[in-house]
Length: 288
Image 1 (cartoon, rainbow, N blue to C red):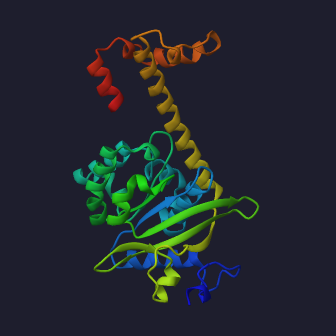
Image 2 (cartoon, helix red, strand yellow; image 1 turned 45 degrees about the horizontal axis):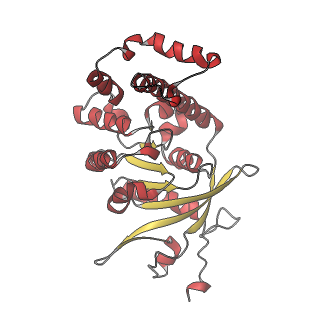
Image 3 (cartoon, rainbow, N blue to C red; image 1 turned 120 degrees about the vertical axis):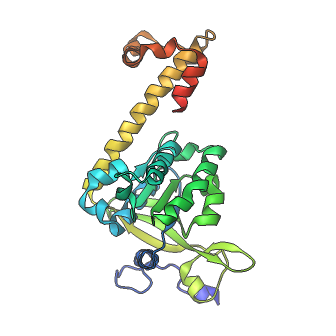
């Protein structure tokens, strides 16, 4: 019987009742209209379209992403657990900036040593504060190579799970599969939403096939600017850390040839004392 169902969800006609992307947007709006927030976990290989999908969903729902792409990219995209916690701090202090986040969509990116490198402790910290986001009706899209890295967050808080398969540049879409949260007295599972409507709760069924359209270039370009800023800071911290570790011994990983030396010198000149501070102060600085 399952084989006879149309579980793909996506056909060429955008007006089809089985259009999975339209279904996702409708279900998100239904939750928002009831005063509830939305948490989405998006996973997939590098280059499979996770960032494009994340930004597109936020853009289709959130007016700030549409009307103020520079603000959205700067304030609503998070590249590390520390940035995530900084937003929570603003909310708890109820500062003027906090009101910017009420009802908005935040994208937690995989870039660099941010979301993709979340430690167990960082995941626990983020999990502990998601209740604050619920109270402010702040919506979160987690963009990760492997959802298993935040499995506790996914099964406790997420409402939708999306797996990105590939991008089709010629059609400006991301191919993905959608599953929706299902819970009864015995289990929590993510299930094909159209199978769920037909009464099937088997999580092993493939998700509904989606074609997620790319967001406009204006927001994508702003996202790229913020991503480059994050990577610049990440690289500088990595150089400073390597210089400190290199002082402990003649290690090949911390030696640089002459034609690269000017790059290292530029970083050190910005904050030369970083290589002379006591170890505990350096560690504290790098942690921050």
